[in-house]
Amino acid sequence: MLDVQSIDLFYGASHCLRGVSMGAQPGRITSVLGRNGVGKSSLLRSIIGLERVRSGKIMWEGKDVTSLGPADRARAGIGYVPQGREIFPFLTVQENLETALAAAPRGEKVSQEVFDLFPILRQFLRRRGGDLSGGQQQQLAIARALTTRPRLLVLDEPTEGIQPNVIKDIAKVIRHLARDRGMAVVLVEQYYEFARDLADEIVVMVRGEVALSGEVGSLDETAVRALLTV
Ligand SMILES: Nc1ncnc2c1ncn2[C@@H]1O[C@H](COP(=O)(O)OP(=O)(O)OP(=O)(O)O)[C@@H](O)[C@H]1O
Ligand SMILES: [Mg+2]
Image (cartoon, rainbow, N blue to C red; front, side, top):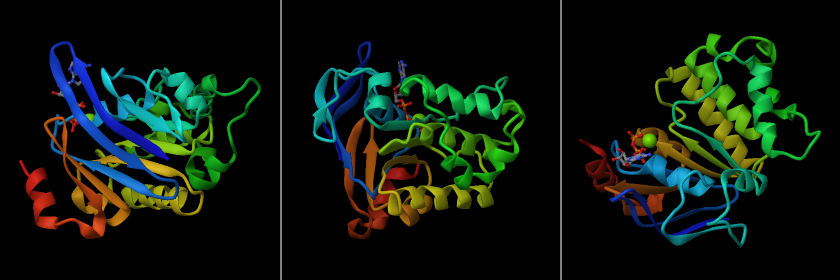
């Protein structure tokens, strides 16, 4: 399991994460909610090693990964889908998937399972990433994170700017990865409804701090909504 213990993150003098604790367990989905700029992406970037926290600890499968870089955390089974997807527009779908193998053992190939989850990608293997629709690009970004078979999947706003029917497909895949494959999932979301329907646990952030967290069913919906509305 993932156990984030009271982490503090600074950007220069700006104190971005303040004693944030949260976690994720195999087979379960934890959703991180909060208004713009509260530090959701910074939390995810700290979990995957793109930001170095000043204090606190990040434990994964019983090991302290706080001082490991992103490649080592990827090797430890942590996959990441960045906000805005960040696919390579001039590389083909196949090549985009292969970029994830940089952190994998030599000779590793793209797992064919990703095409069972996202059949459209098999069809578009030779198409350039930049020529895909937003929804297809998001599916590609998720597929790329899955090529190294992570046991923890961290997704930053996978529904941002995507049509409702594709959002449904993506929700289905995320649910399947947790329920059937036993993956631990951390999902940042803007929309409460999406998180509530998908997540087991919710973490609500306000200005760099966890304001509220718990099992979805146990949280007071009005209180959660009050922390999210602008
Ligand atoms: N690399 C950086 N350098 C300096 N400040 C940063 C950096 N990245 C983020 N910030 C600031 O830290 C705060 C938290 O940003 P972050 O991107 O984590 O928020 P967020 O909750 O993901 O927002 P959004 O909902 O808009 O995606 C913001 O005030 C942001 O401007
Ligand atoms: Mg963000």
